[in-house]
Length: 319
Image (tube, rainbow, N blue to C red):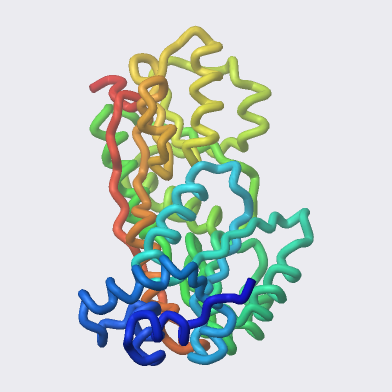
């Protein structure tokens, strides 16, 4: 069966092929009623747009590559949804893929995105140094999400970790807490280090003692929990492990132990957990990232998003 073309649509609609092209690409140069009629006729004829041909003709891609370390963490899932929604609003398509350090998939994905002539690339908490991406960043806009500045070629979008840590420390003080146990994976990536530095600074300013515990060692010694303690956790996913350990010790989060987390995912809002958690505003991060992608490659920008502390039952101890 012959593939329906824009010329076929134009003949059926009684308009020029150029007008059909504008209407189907979402151009505001076409009257809304006319655009709607053309789209309806195209659908009835079974027209399917050839995105590759459209990109070659316009020299502008509608594809955006997005690389995440994994999808186990529900926060990454919420980021993908936010970026896909923003892409939809802009008539773009987000191609999301995962590449953990042990997978060896990163360079292959970068090569494939380059072959697709993507509009730009989003790197979520990248584990490689900036130098790894600089050759690509001079060709396409590259945005690193969740990490501080990565040099002069790669843009960065992230929350203000220092403000987030100040919100947490102030909240802990209001609950009469003088010591915080920070539980996190033992990662040395820039995102983890940036967060830890902010927590150290904020707790010091508030006169709160800080004890750092790795996620694995904490679980091995999880019965050594005392009432009235406060656990600040790297993300909601790890916080669920902490809550399980607290309950296994015969205590309850909120009434016996204060638990505060990061990411404000659906886990935090679940009635079973009711986690106080930092909201990183994924939608705002997506908006800022796509604005950067509209610019030229090689001109790095750093955009900082204001965090919010969503207070729930897990931190009501001593209130």
